[in-house]
Image 1: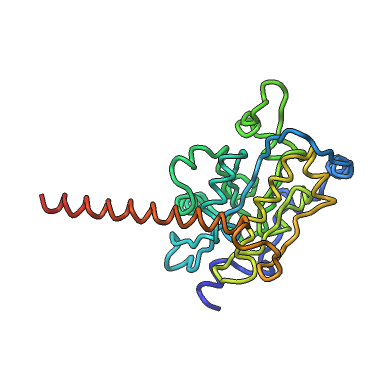
Image 2: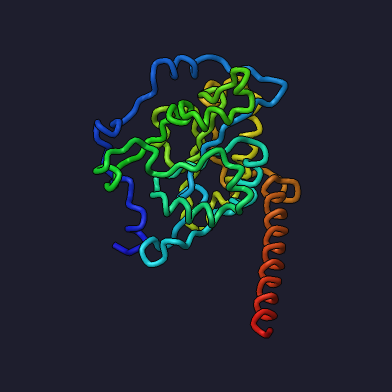
Length: 277
C-alpha cells in the first residue's frame, strides 16, 4: 500500500462509531414527515445555511505523511467559496483533527473570508469518545448539532424575530452520502476530488446553480427529496462554453490568479530591497 493510499483509508476500512459516540444514526420520524411535505416556491430568496466539507470535497491532500500541510484545490474552489460566503451563511465542518482543519482553511480561504464564516468545526464536534476520536471511525454530520448550537443558531439573520436554522434552510455539501445519513434530503453529494482531471471538473459551478434554486424554496429538504442534485459530467453538458457558469468561474479564477501573481512579485521585490539596504 502506498503512502498516499494510507493518507485517506478506503471507506471499507473505516469502522462504525460506538454507541457511546452516538452509533449509526437514522432520520427521525419528525424529519421524514417534514421532508415528505411539498415545498413551495417563494418569491424572495430565503437565507441558507451551507455546511461544507473540505478534504475530498474542495481539497485533496496528495501525501498526508510526508507533506501534511500540502493541499490541492478542486477546480473553481476559490471562486465557489467566495460566492457562498458572500451570498449564504457558511459553516466549514470536517472530520479532520483541528490542526489539519486549520491548514486546509489556510489553503482555501483568506483572512477576510475566514472571518465571514459562521463557524469552523473539526473532529472534536462529532461527540466521539476519546477512543473513537483516535480511531478510523465513520463520522456522521448530524445537522441537529448545528441547529442546537447557540452561536450557529444566533447567526440566522432573523434570529431576533424567530428565524432559526433547520432542515428547511440547511444544505450539506460533502463527498460522502453516509455522512448525511441522519438528514439525507439536505445533502448535495459531489464526487470525491483526488486531483485527477476527469468528468466532474465543473461540478462546483453546477452546485452553485442548484443552491440558487434552493434559496427560492420554502423547505429545501422537501424539495431535495423530489428534486435531488444530479451529477452531470463535463462530457455530457449542454452548456455553451462562452455562456456557461463554468466559463464565468474560470474567468474569475484567472483574474484572481493574476492578482495573486502580482502580489507575490511585489512581495519578492520588497524582500530584495530590504535585503539590499
